[in-house]
Image (cartoon, rainbow, N blue to C red; front, side, top):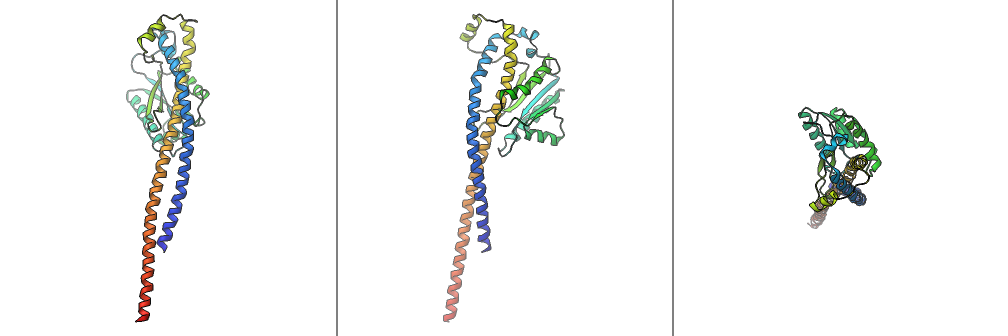
Length: 293
């Protein structure tokens, strides 16, 4: 009897846990749809900026525009901006990002580079605090709905320091949103700005024959900071979407595991109950036979 009571208690406990994980899965699915829409909406503007920059880019422009200026040789001072989430219950999502941030920082330091660590998200901040690592900048207030204003606040001080020569490079470590099941940690070099991937020959010829108004310098003075802010914004929205995808997958796996555990416990409970009933019947029959004899 004690065994069946314990099995009932465990089944009720796991059923309550399954209700929680199922609810969290549904919430993550809803948030994932909105986050995925933000990722898709951000891509056309980013592609348009990259196309314009690709048309205007020339190696000699680095002399006039500090954001294009690359130092000769390996960089000596690099800011690594790592993006993690504020909450857990999303599987190995944060662990993979933290591992990538740490390995990138160690790789740069192994080459004699001084690394400044800038972190977004409580999970990453808590981990590197535990290690005793110096954190130059940190933000915990961005959440899962980042805006362009957040991206601007993060990257503008780094752009200013890069233009002043205090930093040789700026890199962002984020989760690239390929699909809800594929969110690989990615290192994105943000500064100095590199030429975007070339387009087709026909598009390049059309751009070369275009008349540009205002001048190239005036356009680049506006486009270059805007391009860096947009890169930062895309990293934030893709990480937010990746977090919801990872959380939905983790909660679905937890719900499925809870269901399998409940089925196993119910089978065990039925066997125990059947054995108990059989034993009671045998005792009754035995007692009856003893009275007859």
